[in-house]
Image 1 (cartoon, one colour):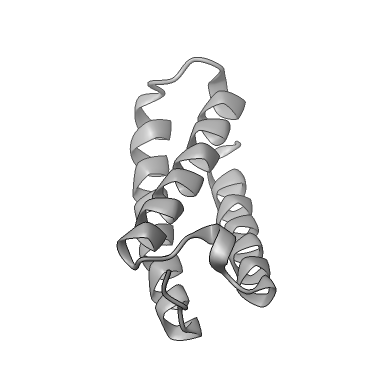
Image 2 (cartoon, rainbow, N blue to C red; image 1 turned 120 degrees about the vertical axis):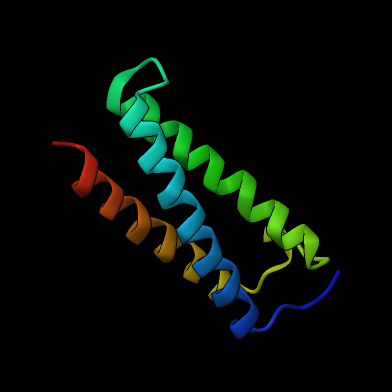
Length: 91
């Protein structure tokens, strides 16, 4: 496993934010999922986790191998992303 730098993690999170925002836009515009807003929101959170792990794996790492400070950064960024999504699409 490779130790990631903060810069690399920031790049991954920036890419992931764009990816999830694009997916949210497409999904909420088309309302393809059952369960309304909550079902779509849950789907996006699962996609975030899957895509994050795939991006980390591509860098020969894993969420389980990140330092606790980096894990906290991921958690905080995920919360920020999903707060924005919730505010934008919940209405």
